Length: 279
Image 1 (cartoon, rainbow, N blue to C red):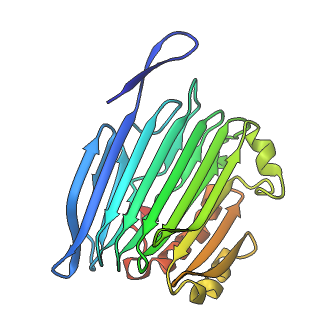
Image 2: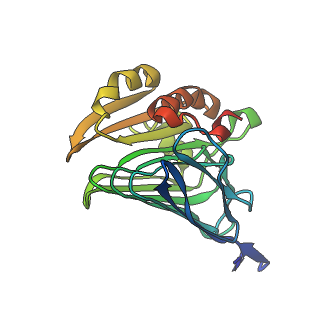
């Protein structure tokens, strides 16, 4: 249901408050829909795909986010089930007149299950205010491929992000123990923050790729070959599993996607690249 907010001119504006929930389970050798809930601008579609896994496409029918908007996604993957979750298009975060846009995703994966969280890029506009949160709870032998990419302005459109606020928070637990945590924040002088060498050295397109799997360490050389010099890759042993973390950055969203697309296709195994990524 839309919320109402005031901007300095006292004009009443509708705000998005939307929720989408998806639960999948394995039945007769394939992953199938168990439960689906959609509220407000949050919609979920499941195109037909080959193989045993299920692909879900998240859609924000509001066409973007701005200050005061809130959208949340929840995904529950049952035992031995496999699900790839992506978005219909890039999420756009527009200039905020007041408040902050918030997007949260909560994911749980049961034993033997696998999640590939692969939303397309988030595009942040000048003077946007945005907070993104990802919480993942994995069983001891569950696997996860988690990707988030962000582009600060579209160079091809002559856009430049100078000011605003951007926050990104990840918490990933495996068998009840925290295995990955990170908090990234830039603003209110976004351009100045990105120009710092320890942040992105002036690059406006960034991505984080996290793989939790026993096969993580064995993928490190192949991942490094794709990431190249504009980024870095590390791998660790985590509990009974493994963890591979890759950071990518580039001068614009198109250049970033040219490396991110083959990386996602390789790491997502038989499920490959989501259909919407190739459109």
